[in-house]
Image 1 (cartoon, rainbow, N blue to C red):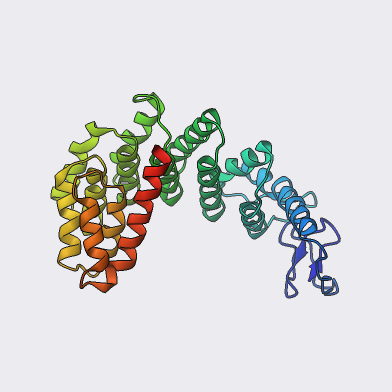
Image 2 (image 1 turned 120 degrees about the vertical axis):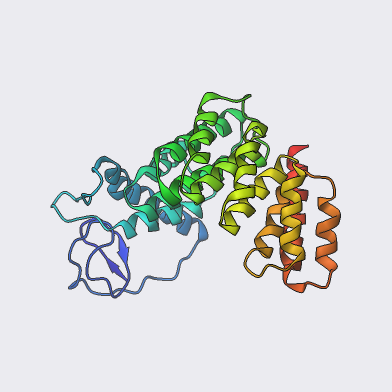
Length: 307
């Protein structure tokens, strides 16, 4: 491994530039690290590295306007791979100060899509691990803001993470303005991925008055996947039309959509969902059995969490 003499980041043997500060390390000798003596030492080192990565690269990225690479003190551009590495290391840590989590979550607005997407997923993980209702609501609000304030896959993932938080037991206040603003903007989008994520968020939060928009998509959208996601949201709201569409995708063994349709049934609140999934688990269609098992397991977990 190559340790950067400038910032101390440990790079791969083949690296020519430091992944954090971009310093030329082509002449830095390769040194094999000693075997760790204590797992606590490894955890501490990971914590330090994650913190340093955020301070040195991640936070600075947020201050740079889109289209300009962030720079180190000597003018060399930061490598976003270093920020991604730091975020992934944070995922492995069981205990992390709230301030560090907030800094990481702020990277949802990074101009680098990979960094932003990873930050949103981390925020979702932390939201579902919240120990208090107040903390969970703060994460929920942050995810809604990211869904509105970002674009493309990052926006869609932020909405899905917020929907997952609701599915896992968060009870949002009745039709809060920011929730309705987020859902309305997403379900009106021409981007099918964003629209489907808006459907999931509305369904998970029990916003039944969006069922009309979902039905329009189910009945008229030329994309089979878009119709499936609309059906998934409708089934989550207890609408038979959505459930029947998902069942038809499984029954006719649609090669592209049947597995996802079974997975969608994990969120269905229509009577008969559990018996159908149990039949799919033991039926003749062996391809869907693993998905049926996962859906049943998730339904059981969600039921336990909400009790």
